[in-house]
Length: 309
Image (cartoon, rainbow, N blue to C red; front, side):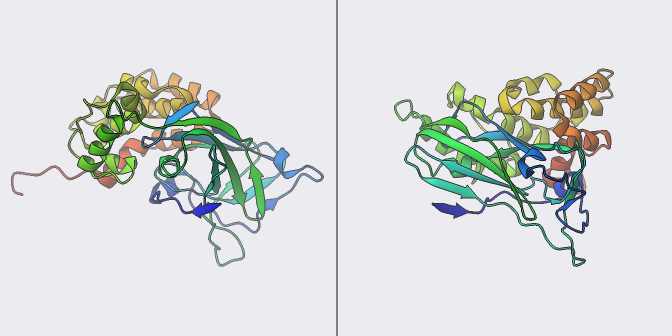
């Protein structure tokens, strides 16, 4: 068994996800006699298969299903946040087990944990990319499990099975992906979103490779392209609006509609809140003018040169 730390970066999104909340302990007003896994639910959503070397995006939802218990010290997680309170365990066809460590909550110095509270009925959803770990596993069946850590509480998800495929060498699929990584200097595909200011040439990639990169290609263009958020095409999110990426596509579409003051933004927001309660933190950020696209542009977009520069 190997244990490793995720390379994901934690930055200001942690504040957007609820900010620091001091708490006295890991659970308050508990439901007496109710098992912990009946109070908290963790769900993993994934595609049936993944290509080793390309994004391996999975959706994770944490939900407090208890009628009375509030859990403190929850650490938000996600693509641009880090592992937070969720530990991921991947087991490949040979039985090789790879653990991606969770982020331990910090003590507030007042006998409590820094994080956010999960009150009864609260839910939190985010995408996580396990591509960095998948690259170390063997092609074939792979089991994925998420384990929620909040103080002394440990709640596992039901495991799900996916299939890992190697890139096609005969069609030079692996070589074209390697070239794209080298040209964009992408240690991880998130780096392409952060730092690749010029549009990468993906014309030589297979369609299935382009499909797996669709979210990151969209984010890169949205962050570094010339168009303001309000001028982006909301229909472009349809390129990755399936499977575990559907909530993400919906949130990004809403941010574009909201920036453009489109009349259909309100109906979409209501639909997203009803369908995916765990998106509430993202939708609240968008309503406040600080959605994912805006934050990424603020963090990584290079200033436009002025005539005096």
